[in-house]
Structures are given as C-alpha cells and as structure tokens.
Length: 108
View (cartoon, rainbow, N blue to C red):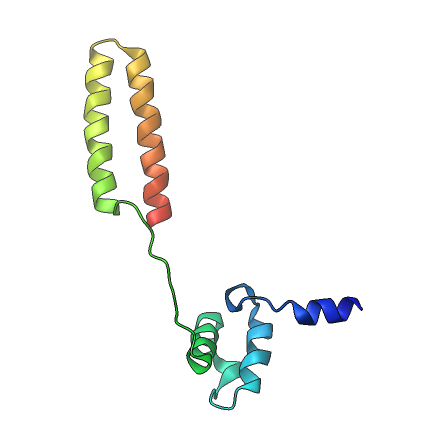
C-alpha cells in the first residue's frame, strides 16, 4: 500500500537524483548515451524529449560590479563617519558593507 502511494506521487524532474533521471531517460528511446551524461545534461535531454519548457529562473538583483561600487561608496561614508567620531553610523555602514559582500559571494 505504501508503494502505491510512492508510485502515484511522481517527483518533479528537478528534484530527482541522477539515478532516477537515468532510469527515466532509459525508458525514452530518443535519448542515447544516458550513462555518460551528468545531471544537467540528463535533465535537459528528458525535458526536451517530453516537450517540457526549461524555465531556468534568473536571479533578481544587482550584478557584482554594481554591488562592489556600492561597497566602495559605503566604505568612503564609513571612513568619514569614523573621522567625525560617529561610531553608531560607522557600525551601520559596516553592517551594510557586510551584507553587500555576502550578496557578491552569492551572485558569483
């Protein structure tokens, strides 16, 4: 009974493992060289064979170049805040710089 529930609920292709994708691809006669493919190749081949549109989502947000420009501006503002002996404002700029640096690492 538990096996019937698992068979009824089919995983989305994006969530499948490589071995599951290979078993799906072996059932489709149009796809050759299944065992030599990696996950992204298998995923695109199966989607193409089944006629599924590949909707790769682009990340929203600024590019690294724009983020780094913002970081440079904030660093200059932080320096001026430190020279003006405004430690609370300098701490705010430091946190903003840290957040932007994390965004650049994620965007890379």
